[in-house]
Amino acid sequence: MAKKETFICIGCPLGCEVTLTIDEKGKILGFAGNKCKEGEKYVFEEYTNPVRILTATVLTQNSAQPLLAVRTSKPILKTMLAQGAAVLARTKVKPPVRVGDIIVPNLLDTGVDVVASANLSS
Image (tube, rainbow, N blue to C red; front, side, top):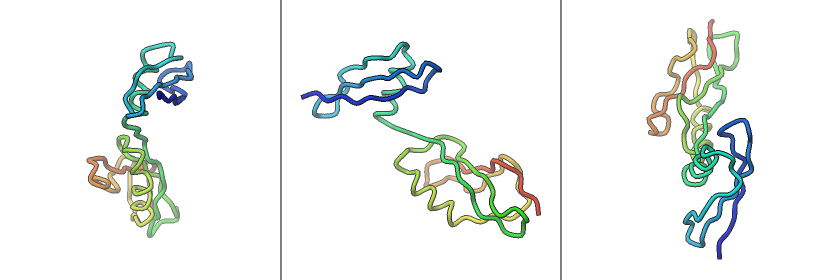
């Protein structure tokens, strides 16, 4: 028996409620409710391979600023967010740091770097 899952598309400003129909083996049977092709593309990706940008803060050393905002340079798998956050919880940086500097290269062997989202001075 087919099952249905509903997603709110963020592909464009319309925010369509898209219903995905899936068979018992997980095969996609169809989409309904999207007002543009972007909705179908977004829901397909969200169902088959959901990814997110990881944003966080890391501790600093030798700085008046106790935390530094960081983010991944590209999206990573949603299932890896907790592991990535655990790595960042153990990370400490020293000034000087500029926006865009790589803080953690190749996070969890994903090929994605964690970069500074702010400057850090001493």
